[in-house]
Length: 71
Image (tube, rainbow, N blue to C red; front, side, top):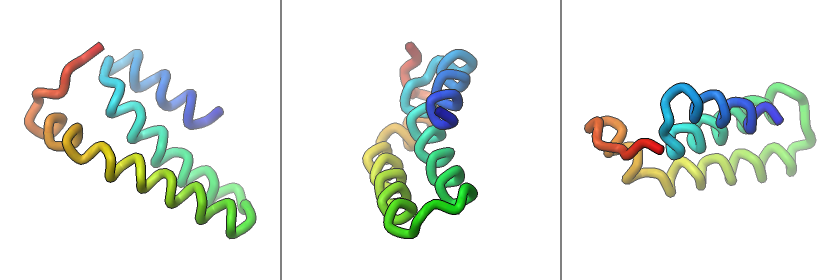
């Protein structure tokens, strides 16, 4: 729910889906590590979050260049 809230707020404020997705992935990693979850669960969430970031490499480049499309 925390990651969904971050995604929603970022989408409402910046209107960029990829930015919301990446920040939600980072939020999920922070939450799973901060809430003392079992190690296998933490590793799975960290791997999934990093996968989301890696898959958004082109989006990161467009965000830095200021050319990422908005909703």
